[in-house]
Length: 224
Image 1: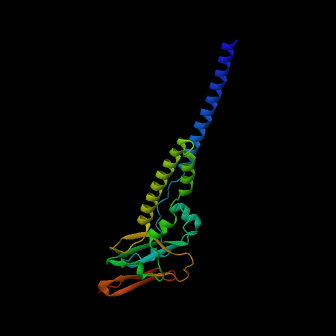
Image 2 (image 1 turned 180 degrees about the vertical axis):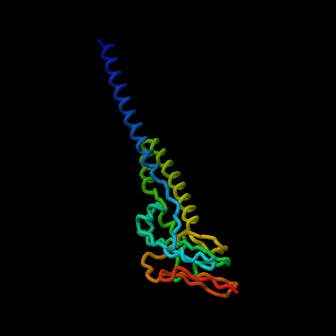
Image 3 (image 1 turned 90 degrees about the vertical axis):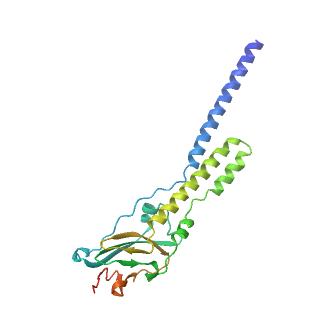
């Protein structure tokens, strides 16, 4: 009877231990899964086309089109709501359909622009709170250190991808060679008025500036 009772108690204890182990394993898997939520995934920018660009196929024109992003565009192309962070993305496509090189500079936009690195930093994934919680839990059960590490590594990788993508999509100072198209983003403060948004391109050989705006999306390039 004693031996039978002992086997019975051991069986119950093993069963309870098995249930606890299963519960702990499932919980740990869920925690690791949740900690892996830090990621970055965004689409490439499409090229914009000026509505009347087809009228300027005479090898003497420059045209541009722009689009002010809304929150849906931010999520689609940047995977982050940068508008809520205080920044307004504006996509610009410039087509140099001429035989001359022209130059683009953010300084020649009639609105102050923000460094894309500043914008990217403002929407970095921050898991410090979760890492602290996991760290405290790990003091009582070491496996909680696993999701803390996974979360930290995942966040760092997501932020690196975000930085690279923002830098790649940002429209920087550059030369537009003949028949070249440039396409990218600038960032302005959220409260900026874009009703009379315009950019100026320089054409050194003709000593002229080509000003493009919503009212004048195309301009002729003069030849000496």
